[in-house]
Structure formats: structure tokens, C-alpha cells
Length: 380
Image 1 (cartoon, helix red, strand yellow):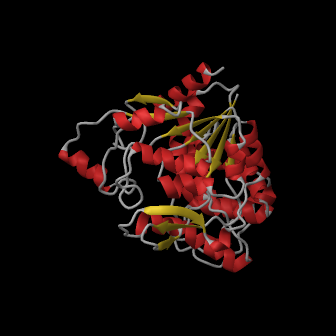
Image 2: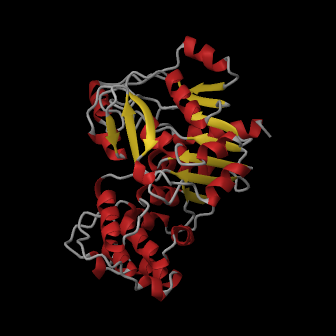
């Protein structure tokens, strides 16, 4: 059985680690990951890459989290220390070999460094990324993947190496390796460019009317691996996330919609537990469904919806409202009218308490993984 997940790192990486625990090994999992990230140090590194090598560096941020979530390495705990490690010292990128990057984080862990030296050949370990700029504030893992991409000059080979290093048994694929910068057109005709501006920076009051690729990204196409994965899928799961910048950003890549429209796979959408100020405030469940189906160009077979309203303390309510993924918005639920309209299209609705009480807005990952497994087992 083949299952394909489409989305971005936050939800993908969180739920995939439970998919790894819950799913039997005879299920083949493919994670197709968004490539529209352009915020913070990721954008700085991509700019440095472009000005130094005149080459586009597909953003490594989302991929690295998904690769890590599907790791079966006995050193997974050690690798986790590298995942979010931010370099604090004023060191130049072109002074750091691959081995130096690992030694920066755990110089005292000789066993782990010995494992890296034995697993990776010397030519790769000694390679330096020829960017004469400071490594300070960059994520170690982003620099590692940028270094490896420069080493192989092939993004697929870089990912294959990461899968080898982390002992990933399933497949993680970027939705495209071309530039995939996005722009949002608002109902008042305002245009906001770039993912980080749409999702985290821009303060706009008019709703988003449409999401498109920017002119510099019009040629973005999926790889053959993406097309093949969708073609062979029995189930395709669209993850929750910021509806435009995290989800639709994948569906506007050239040919993806065609591949999805012609796929015989069952389509499952895991609906958001909350709305988010700017991007989705005021949207109902049916609005989310209509947006997803418009860009998919076909109807959904299943939607998974939270039906539990937590009784939050004032401190918890403040924590929820200030989270970057919520931004002063709140929980949204499926009303009876929307439920009637969705079911009239023969879309099956699965409702339950899917709230993760630690984050207050994310999904309970193990319940989502078990729900997906039940859907698959009932369709055999």
C-alpha cells in the first residue's frame, strides 16, 4: 500500500514521527514537502548561494525536519541536537568542513563523531562550502545540506545521502527543486509577495483571493519522483497548515494539479484546528474544503476534523492567541449546515478530539496516525 503526504514541515515532521511508530513496514510512505520557504536565515543562505554560485538553493528547512522524523538511526537522539542548533560563533562558512559542522555541536561526543567518520567518506567530510560569509546565526543542519548540495551538485543525490546518513526507510521528496516563490492576490487587488510576508509579516485586512507563483518561478515543475509517487498512490493525505502558504503552495506547482486530478488515490484532508489572523480569519470548515478542492481540481474523499473545544485557562488562552500559527484567532468547528453540504458530495467526515493539549492548537499526532491507518485498513 502506498500513501503520499503533501504539506510543509511543521505538521509533516510532527505527525510523520508517529506514522513511523504506528504504520507497519509494508506500507510505503512518501512525504512531498513544500519548497516555498523564504524566511529568516533560510532566505539569507539562499541569497548567499545565489550570489556566490549563481545557483538556486532549494530551501533545506522543511526537508531536514521531515527526514529526521522518518529516521530509524540508533543515533537519532544525537542527530536531534543538530536539528535546531544555531551557530553562535563568528566563523566563516568557507572555513567549515562537514566534519567541523558536526564537531561544533558535540565536540565531546567522540563515539558519535567516530560513527560519522566511519559512515561518511573522507572526500565528503573534508568538503568546504565556498561561501565567504559568516556562519553566525545559521542553523547547522541548513549549512550541512547546502554544503552537500554544492558537493554533489544534484539535489536528489543530496537527499539520498541524507536518507543514508539518517537511515530513512521511506521517501522524502521536495515538491520541486526549482524556484517556488509565491504571491497572494487579495480581494482588494493588493499583491503580497513571498511566503514569509504572506504568512508572518504582512498586516493585511482584505482576504486572500488567489495564490500564484511569482513570475521568477513560473517554470517550477515537480520532479519525476513526485509524479511517480502520486501516480502509484493508494491514498494521498493533504496535511493541515496555513491554508495558502503551507498547503496550496504545493498545489500550484506546474503539473501537480494534473497529476492529482488523474490519480485514482483516495484523497484525505486533515483540517486545521484553528484559524489564523490575516491568512484564514473568518473562514469556516466549508471554506477550507472549497479552497483545497479548487486547487486540487477534484473532490476530497475524507476530511478529518476536530470536534473538541478545550476549556482553557486565561494563561492558556493567551499562549494560544500569541502563537505564530494562530495570531489572536481561535478554534473553528464544523457546523451542521457545512456538514450537510460536505456529506452531500459523498465526502466522509471523521470527527474526534484531535487537540494536542501541549501546543493547544496542533493535532494529537498519534491519534491522527491511528485514524489514517484505520481509513487504509477499511479500504483494503
